Structure formats: C-alpha cells, structure tokens
Length: 321
Image (cartoon, rainbow, N blue to C red; front, top):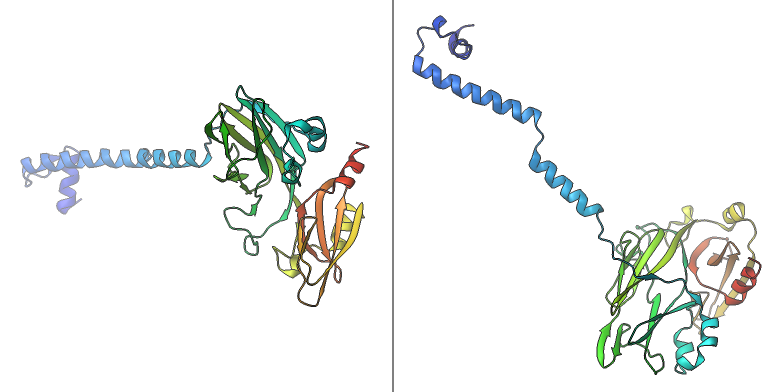
C-alpha cells in the first residue's frame, strides 16, 4: 500500500509504526471515524428500514382490515304474499302498491313497536362487465337502488312509510334507519338506504335501527355471459353460446313494443324510435329462475341481463323443489 490511503489503512489496523511520517493525533481521529463508519454501514446493510416496514404494514392493514359490525339477528324472510295474507289488518291500503317488485318480508319487534323489512331477492345475477364499456359508474358498477324498504308501526297502529326512505316517528321521536355492510368489497351503501354492487360472492348488509343491528345476506353471482351493453360486438355472447352451456331455455318469449309506447318489461326498458317497433327475445332457465336474458331477434346477440322475477313461473318451477 502507498500514499494517503495506505497510511489510513495502516492506522486503522494499528500499524502506525509503519507510517511514522503521519500525525499521531490525526491518525486517532481518522481511526475513530472509520470505525464509526464501518459499524454504521454494517447496520444499514443487515437491518431493514424499520420506518419503511412499519409504514408498509400499517398501510396494508388499512387496506385489508374491516371492523365487522356485530349482528343481533339475521333475516331469513318469508314470501311477502303469504305474509300480507296473514297480516292484512296491519297495513294501510297503499301498502301492496308500495311493495310491488319485492318478494320477501320479515318483522322485527321492539318495545316501541315493529319494523317491517321487505327486500327484492336473496340472489342477484349480473353478466360479466367491462369497465371500459360499462354504463355504470366506476364506484358502483351496478346500482341496486332501493333494494330494501322499511315500514314502521308504533304499538297499536298500522305500518307507515318512512320519510325520505329512512325516517320514522317512534313515540314522537325522529328515528333513522341506516344501512351499512360487513363486505365493503361486495357492496357500497349510501345514506339514502340505497346501495351499489361492486363484486360477486356472499354480501352482508347491516340494517341499523334503534338498538338493533339486523343482518341481511345476499348472494351476488356473475353469470358467464358478455352483453352488448358492456362489451364490443365481437366479444358478446350469442344465443348459440348459451345453448351450448345451458341447453334450451325453460321459458322463451318474443316481446314487441311499438312507438309511441314506452314500457319496462322483465326489468328492461322498451323505448322504440318514432315510427318503429322494438322486438326482443327473453330467455329464462329454471336453475336461475329470477334471471332474464335478452337477445336480439336478427342475430341472437345478448343485449342485456337482469334479475327480475316472473311470479307465476317462479312458483311453478319451485313447487317441485
């Protein structure tokens, strides 16, 4: 070794005697600095950045951790038509029109009265979706609207509708229904008691009213089809594809609506252009009795799919199950 670097190395190794021309005091200072530097370097190489690890873990925990809302009872639901038949005296005259399109009901009792909860379906079906082509917003791929509705009766009275979908007067005190979820990756709830669909699987709604947290479980299923609403034409499912997968439909009908009429049939809008007739074919399968698939008549292209019940078919098909 030669030069300054050689002399520093000798000082560090304790070889000051081999470099007598160096300043002894300076050698001690440099030796101390080198020792400190070496230990600092060893620590940096062998020890992870604790600040970084801690921050990463906390961020990861924030993404995955969900504080579950405790459930006091879980709704099972009875057929709403049967329920109404056995509770006729509990309802105002307009109740049946207010619950059209809802098929399940259950009563939850409180000291102050009873909350009646009605909902549309236990199973929801949606076709595959492409965010590029989907008409839904990114946050709520499919809006489910007022999937659940509420009615309240104080002791000795009849059921009444809420104000703004969620407020009741309970013994002269304004009381609010709130909707939360224990599965935020499946459902996003809104302040007005509507919610949007985010993903498939078992979804958990939590209805909070007075002193009870009420659970409602819904199965959301993505059926393996691509509709023209969400995908480019060359990727869309055709009637032939569906027959290969599921066989012939158990119910099939052609629906035609002529201008100037505008109708919603099987949950789908028929709004023909001026002077034209709009015709579509609707398919149903017993294995998914509430699922409707809409095809174009001219080329068998899947135009859309929705969850809508035909009560006559539903009860006929389920009578043997």
